[in-house]
Length: 160
Image (cartoon, rainbow, N blue to C red; front, side, top):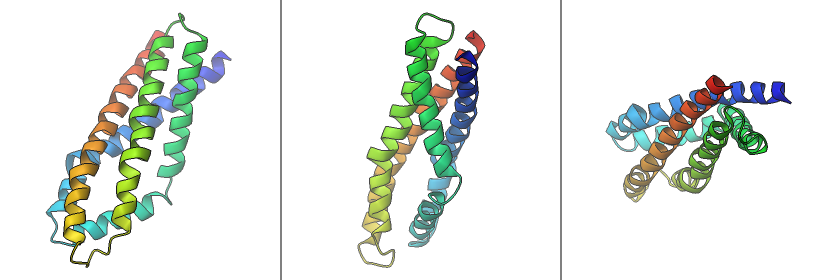
């Protein structure tokens, strides 16, 4: 069982780090760059990103990292009191809530609404403003959650 936990912990740590980097890039400069483009170019680019990302390796990593973190939270509870257990629970739970749940509740509905909007429609600019105002704060939550989760998972590795 220890080998499974160790392998899951390493996979989760690496994949959470990758996800943190992706969200960090979007929070730091990708979205601002898209917003700086002349309308409707930024909106069209984000619609393309949203279509392509779900057909890329991002989606399997998104779900595999979520499953790994959920397992780590369970493993940590099962081995409560052992070295690294609380860090696995906290890091895994934070990732599942702050990344997976936030994505499903916050970002995906906004992505769907953006996709349903014709970028050349007169109302498209208002949709893009709404999207930027709501999507980016949710992405900041994902960025911080992934980064803190990463730190906790590294601490779990160090403690074990």
